[in-house]
Image 1: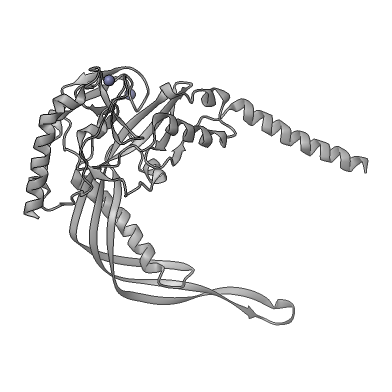
Image 2 (image 1 turned 90 degrees about the vertical axis):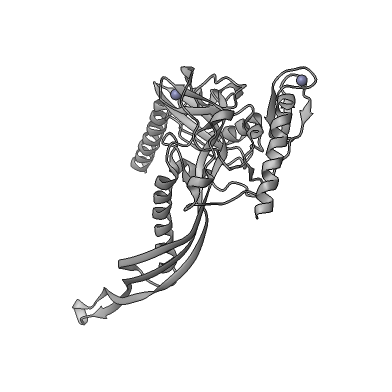
Length: 365
Ligand SMILES: [Zn+2]
Ligand SMILES: [Zn+2]
């Protein structure tokens, strides 16, 4: 283990030395950006490709020792803040932010804030911007009530590749529980005219112990991104997860974490509690739960600070931003579109017209 960590440090130092050569294209001097198709750095001007070393051995950080493990991200990134909505994003130093990934406006300015913790893992973008846009278009096609202007806004210039931060937690849990569950039964009561079926519940007390190992419970680490949206974009392809390396960021934005590891761990425990209740109850046959008390201990808790590749598309409609998110790793899409009042009216009138027509036809008969 010690040997391994030493090896990683040496590799990093080698990369630091090569950096100045790799960031600028050796052919023409233009910027090199991360290319999802080849998983290398590619010159935005002449297409020259430079590979860089990637490691798949992502380390889990012990939550108890996390203070010693914390490396900051500050020296290798610039922080920008949006004057319009307050979003904070992180870029590699040679890049300049043009649009805010939260509200789409260009009121984004360089800030002296710090980038905070350094991520230790990244799911690289495997879809290009164009491929991400195609996924969003297929998704939008099925949104019947979305206004035409929204569908027209699905152009590559409006798409931003952003690494969204999250913490993923592992925990070995041991729980004891007790509760009361019930099963509905029916019986026939009365006789003659009063004969009827009634439902009654047979209650049963349950108790026991339950062990479960959680792996990578994913908690969104910013307030500008909804946990719900993140959950809808899951899963991410774990075959692609790599040790964080700043070159994955070239050409993309990243949002820095706003929640602390410990606050996120509190949220993870709530998610785990819910999951444990579900798993405990799934061992029984029941219709109703009177109560279920679960007491859980967590052991060997570890976390990773992970960047998730997401293409965001922001569509401003009547002064309100609507966002579509595409998982840049798998293409899964989620989001909100405004509803076209015109289309809703047309459908309502259409339905009324059909009803009216049926009424007329029935009268004729
Ligand atoms: Zn070049
Ligand atoms: Zn903004």
